[in-house]
Length: 457
Image 1 (cartoon, rainbow, N blue to C red):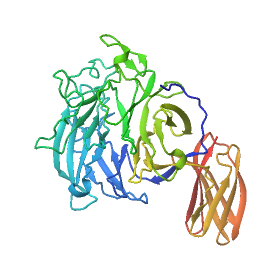
Image 2 (tube, rainbow, N blue to C red):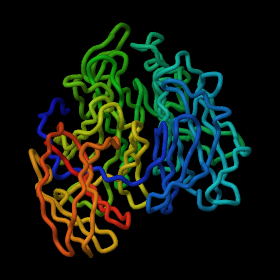
Image 3 (cartoon, rainbow, N blue to C red):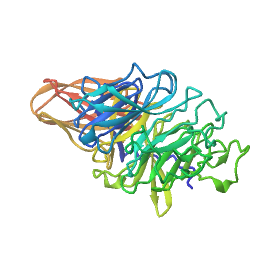
Image 4 (cartoon, rainbow, N blue to C red):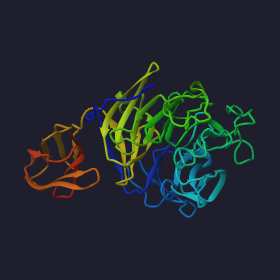
């Protein structure tokens, strides 16, 4: 098991590139198998953006009339049926007006960009004793069954011991069959506790606190569960394909560390995390991501990408031959990144709840790529930078341009007007800004903008 890590940041390789804007309360990014992304908003709306990042003006689904949106409650999960292209079914996980978790099925309308909110079919309801730790991440597995990550029911320290209670669905990973028979759902015959009268048969694994988020590896079906800790430790549980029945230990253990072992079994009864990290340096709440299986960034292939909500530190977990190593690769905004997503090509995205942006994850050499627009181009070095940068702007004409540096949140940090000649123009910019992520933009006389991301160390 991996534990602690060094704080070396390889910022020259990992980048977040603005992809789409105009969202609020973002908690999910999903795809249905085509070029679109579906952005889940906690208040009860789902919006679509196309492959260029354009956000469609009307929501795909609006169920704000039946969603309780408060604190950690709201619309928390979206899963498209494996046969969505032919049946139009998708499933959502939300907290209803009574404060309980509701799994429901909807269907797309005749317009592929609008769902029919009147097609709701209730699948499963789980009573919630408190208003936090609702989990919410819901996905179809490679086996075609629907998996549902449930938090422990909330408060703090799991006072009702729900996670270890085999007759409660709270603090569990559930696995149900929504395709067979006439019932809203059935129990897969190979669920690990299907023959036990002492367990709810929906349970796939137990001992979770608040799995935020979890995913399947598209290559091998392995499950990565990012489970938010209580006071001291965040953890990633790794489960091989088709190997249910694990007890991940909460509330007996937080990570690999005893928390409340009253009435607990011996240590060998629990499956401890593949990786854990402490609440030091401000870390406090893991946001789980995906194992990267896209094709654009070969050096990222096979790495599990995740972040911490509180610090905005992005990390990569590489696993080789049963061993693992972790790299901290990016220092982003605090209290911002709530969820990752994949497109149909397995490229990764992350949503920022502070500024309403969706970013595309990039990994490779520093941003020395030339930005171009309408005959103009922009490049600068070094990147990452420290005290200053040298900018080269190539213009198609003699004109006046506006030069801006803005923060990730859109705050204008620097502004200057410059007269440029046709061809290449070079100048220096001093950078008296705090360490972080910024954007350098040049706007020409026609209003056309070229922008590059900038990292200041």
